[in-house]
Amino acid sequence: MSYKVGFMGFGGMISGYHLGTIRREDVPFEAVAAFDIDPERRADAEAKGLIAYDDPDRFLSEGKYDLVVVGTSNNYHCELACRAMEAGFNVMTEKPAARNSAEVARMIETSERTGKLFTVHQNRRWDPDFLKVRQAIADGCIGKPYMIESRIHSANGAGDMYGWRGMKDHGGGMLLDWGVHMLDQILYMIEEPIRTVYANVFPLWSEEVDDYAKVVITFESGLCAQMEVATYAPIPLPRWMVWGDRGALTMQDIGSPAAHVRRIKQDTTAYEKVKAFEDYEVHFREQSRHRIQEFEEFDTDRSPGGGWHSLYQNLAGVLAGKEELIVKPAQVLRCMKVIEAAFRSSEEGIAVRF
Image 1 (tube, one colour):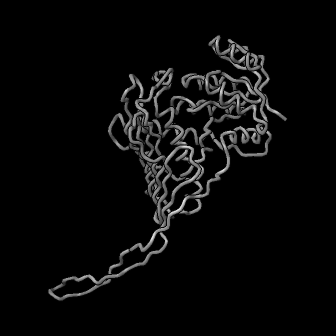
Image 2 (cartoon, helix red, strand yellow; image 1 turned 120 degrees about the horizontal axis):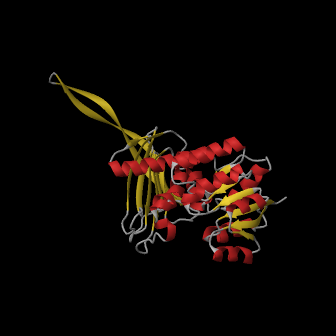
Image 3 (cartoon, rainbow, N blue to C red; image 1 turned 180 degrees about the vertical axis):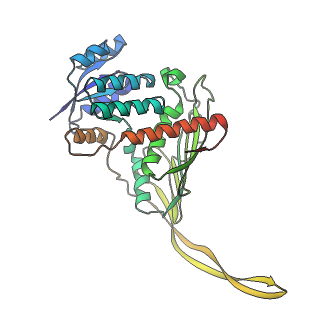
């Protein structure tokens, strides 16, 4: 069985990646129609075998879709997603789900009221670098982690916040563009409660939106996770660094399926006698010191499995009643609240209690 898909917006991500993924043999979906206000994009949709609409009402009233994918600029996600769910269709939006948590909450409320599925295209949960880091932590490869650093650095000069991505009222900016992926990965990997959010978010080259963001999350256990996205980083740092109480791992590049690990191989607990002067009498006590004797270094297995198309395969399983939804609305809302806390932290220069 194949599930019919209609697109609201037919820009580069939809006409390229989404359409190509849906047409894979191992993805049971069929693209049938697209709505877009741009006549060139409608012509492109027709050339690719889809019915093209210039009116969203006709798109919704005439279509018979199992899933509507919303891929417009961010400021239209909420309105179009809610209209599609009200019309009786399951919905997936491109990331970010919306511009703020109030819009995400409205989308969740509409989903619950209409009984229609709502999710977000957080495809980078299937990035090989993220899968490998998550697996290494879950396997206890470096013990209990206490610091995680996730970065996307552009080393090729100033990043261009092109098109609507450079417009604040359209939900542009690097924190909502790349940051939402990186924060989603961290929050998906670390499910414990958040204590504080501290951030520095600002425009370096852009005229009205952020093109640099650093967000530091402190979790209830004390674990610290840092996300940094920089459009201008002439000397880039590693994609991932994770420190644990039994070792550390690093991964240089996005998309890399292997992490380099330096792990404690042997350790001893040494003791030394410490003098204490009490009433002019000398006493001795033993003080422990943790001393590492040796490390082992290795690269992890290069076969993390999965791929971006796994998100669509999961959706097919959900629609068939055989699987649980992986990208859950509550997770999306939590991530958006972290982003809002980051903006507030940067504006006020404070750590925000979460």
